[in-house]
Image 1 (cartoon, rainbow, N blue to C red):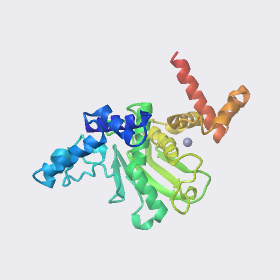
Image 2 (tube, helix red, strand yellow; image 1 turned 30 degrees about the vertical axis):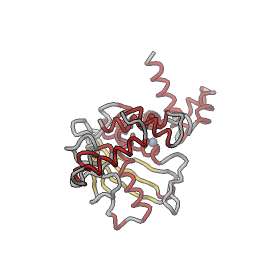
Image 3 (cartoon, helix red, strand yellow; image 1 turned 90 degrees about the horizontal axis):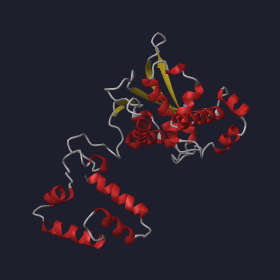
Image 4 (spheres, rainbow, N blue to C red; image 1 turned 90 degrees about the vertical axis):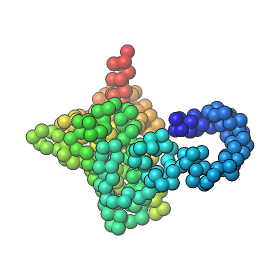
Length: 288
Ligand SMILES: [Zn+2]
């Protein structure tokens, strides 16, 4: 598999103590019969020169089919019959599909530069990354897979420019059944500077993983709204982990049981941390 080769190459690049060109040599040797960068380039140029046409060289030797609609991202390389991901494009319409989820975004001409940048990043990799992390963390049930149990498979992206939250997932549900019927993700542009650089205290990807955990859980758990807040927040924090982000909070909560107990029924950061600690404790004990 081509993708596996690249993965092994990338892994070797990370693991090798060598630097620069020597590191590339080593990484190439680790996953191929090429004896290094010089040998690879020699062979590359030789095949190009010898090919009967440029197209043949690209398709036969490089696996690049310029007419396939594929951007050439490594993710799509081994699945030539599948629609390829557009890794650098802006969505063509105001909605796009992602692993069973339809994501609705405002029309491009109503968005400013920063908002367009956010949509572009969500579309190209951030949302997919968050969904994959969540499914990897919590299993097959936690997705928008059409074969799954999600009661809603649509997400509205909305922008706000004030408030003391970086992003926020919201859901509406049927009072009668407890089934979620609508999902929204608000993103607060106040946390971006004029150049479009994220200024939140933790990365936007982690904020997104947290918020999308809420969305995925709400879509799949009937009466999600009824879960204790510290369970909802504790699991959302578990998705990306907070040992670094909330270290001092965890330290202080763990040093006093009364404070810890109070934290579970409080709000804000200490409740999040306490919920996270609870889930970690549960996992550890249940696994014994
Ligand atoms: Zn949350």
